[in-house]
Image 1: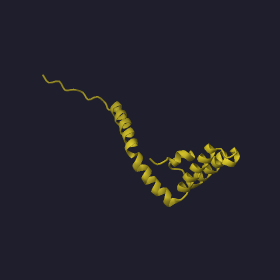
Image 2: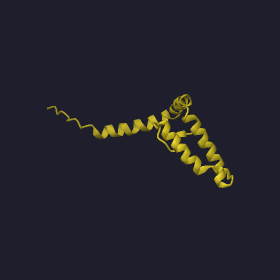
Image 3: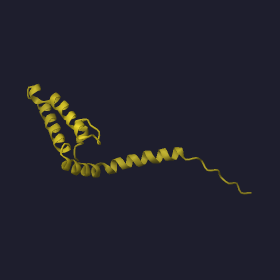
Image 4: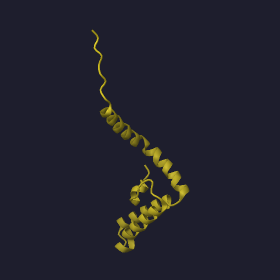
Length: 102
């Protein structure tokens, strides 16, 4: 299962390059291991941020990632979407009058 790089950087899936860059800078500063005496947690988090930024900041890598990400999560999300859509659709449908035959 691939990581959700959008979630790692805290940006929306439709974020532009400037939003991705700003999110990376913000988090990289916050989680830089040098600021935390080499703490392994911050070191791993920083590497994860770098990996996410490396992919999402490169147009070709991002397109490839998005395709893989969509394929991986499409079943999960489409199921959730279809469930919510069918429930919503059922609630909005007007009840049809039943014809009485005499």
